[in-house]
Amino acid sequence: MTIRVLLADDQALLRSAFRVLVDSEPDMEVVGEASDGAEAVRLARAGADVVLMDIRMPGTDGLAATRLITADPALAHVRVVMLTTFEVDEYVVQSLRAGASGFLGKGSEPDELLNAIRVAAGGDALLSPAATKGLIARFLAHEGCPDDDGRDPARSERLATLTGREREVLVQVAGGLSNDEIAERLEVSPLTVKTHVNRAMAKLGARDRAQLVVVAYETGLVRPRAE
Image (cartoon, rainbow, N blue to C red; front, side, top):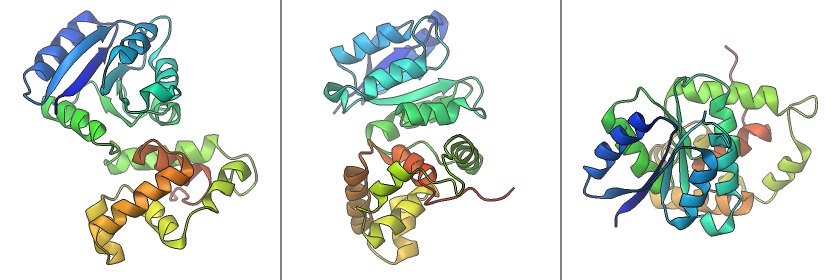
């Protein structure tokens, strides 16, 4: 199956470089290019699996465009990978809250970009670097604390629908562990972990693992470590 990739960046030179790289892979192809967020949304509706979305674009920016894409039921299969010049900033959390499956620095190696497309297309989250997880934890805890203990009552109610094991798996997902790593830690099979993850996503209304991380921190189920 060929992964259909949409490139959204206001710099034509970068789009051209990304197109050459993506089209060189046998399992993916570029199906469109957009220079702003509004065009990205329109082209996504025309057919795309993964959108490489620049955050800063004129007019409708990447964050607004991502919200429009992820809020459209007809585009439920579309995954967005945010591209940013600065990986360590508040845009990371804003991207995840907008519904992105993860983010990637524009200075990443070609293999990292291609892997990011495949990871996103497969429904996984691009949240592996430890520094990134720590950053996400800090920002979510700081920005989403409606009461004294950092829990959002409305979101916390959704956790009540999870079984004890599903909550346990959610904590591990928020820690950035893969299904295999979680399976080893909990002494169960990777297939069992995958089942728990899928059930948690369904109950919490999460599009993918990245959204599970957001819910875990915003509900206070997982708290950021002290520096």
